[in-house]
Structures are given as C-alpha cells and as structure tokens.
Length: 305
Image (cartoon, rainbow, N blue to C red; front, side, top):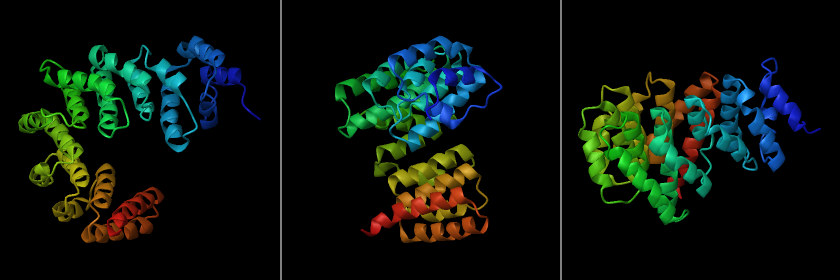
C-alpha cells in the first residue's frame, strides 16, 4: 500500500519517527500539489532530518533511475543553511538538465558560503564534460566555462573555490587549461597542487605523466591520493609498482582509489595486485571491498578485448 504523502510530511517533521528509505522514496516524482505542500513544510523539518533526506536521495538516485527528486533538491538549493545547500548540490549529482545548470551558475558566483560556491562550481564540471562529449549544448556549457575560469583567476577568491574551479575547467579543451594546471601545480599551496593533479587526470593528456609519477612519492597524503586518481585516469602502467606499494597499510579511501586506478590501468601487473587484494578482502570478509575489486578486475579485463 502506497504511503500517503501527507503522512510522509508529518513523519519528516516529527523527530520521533526515523527517516526511512521508503519515506524518502515517496518524495520522488511529485505532482504540483505535492510539491507545494512540501514547500510549505520544508522549514518545519528539523535541519538534521533535512540533511538525512538529501543523503538518502543521493543513494536512491544512483540505485533507481526511475526516481526524480528535483522538487526536493531544487527546494534545498534555496535553504538558509549553508550545509544543506551544499548537500543539495551533492544529492543532485546526476542532474544534467539545463534547469540545474541555470541554478548552479549563480550559486557558484554569488552564494555567501565559500563551501557552497566550491560545490557549485565543481558541479559545473559535469556540464562542461558532457558538452565536450557532444551530449550537452556547447553554448550552455560555455557559460559554465566562463564562470569556472573567472573564479579560478580571482586571486581573492577562497582557495577551495579556486581548486574546484580548476577541476571543473579541466574537462574543457580550452587552450588556457594547460597553463592553469601548470600554474596551480607550481603554487605553494598544497591544495592547489592537489587540484592540479586531479585536473591532469581529467585532461587525459600524457604530457602530465611524469608529474603524476613524481607525486606518487609525495609526503602529502592528499597529493598522493590525487596522483593515484590521475594515474588511473591517464592509464599510466609505469605507476603500477608504486601504487602496489601504496596499498600496503593504506587508509580505506586511498585503498579504494588505488583499486579503481589499477582497474583503469588494466596491465598484467595491476591485475596481479588486484588478485592479491581480492584474496585479502575474502579473508577479512569485506563484501564492499570484494565488490570494488570485482568491478576493477572487470574494467581491467576490457584491455584483453
């Protein structure tokens, strides 16, 4: 039996009722009347529960492509709380509509929160990429490119925003991207250096290989992490021995990135490392890790076709 929408709203407002996945799913594909009812009560839902709703939406959107949570995410993009606007951007990560782009553009430029501006300009990167692939309007994407370039070039802008702007524009074939990456890589701020490595991978340009290989030995964990990601993006077989060493005693996030990168590189040595990691994951009965390694091995096997 379908959950009545008014019951869902009452449950969301009440802190006595746990926020369930089925409850959040009912917020999908809303009609006009339901959307207006949600708008009226949104501010009455406790902040922590609004945040939980957005986290569930991010998960459900990935698992079920028939869901449409635009009514919720667009509403949350206007929330008075910075962390909720940022969470709304993350929850709408699959939304590649012109409507979403038009909402992100002003948020990237004028939102009062640096973290929200950073999330918004970072999200513009997917529209830039889709245009490069011929799947989105180049004219619309140029607006995103202009905003990203402007934010990156603004030396007074928060460093987080500049980093995400560089990561976004790296999806573009614009000639100035190479210079922006070089400038950031040479910058004294390690956050910009890490962003430059991320951007190197996104360009799929082999000119960056030697820089990526060098940074796999960096003392900075964040820079090593981005070097691993870039090595995967660039398919650097020379990076496999170093990545193999880095997985020893690596933190979980670094381990998962290394597994993904090895799958993207797909060499015989990378598959041998993945096989060893698979046996380890089976020994510790880590189902999530097993699944990630299986996905990586499947990606690596494509190189045999």
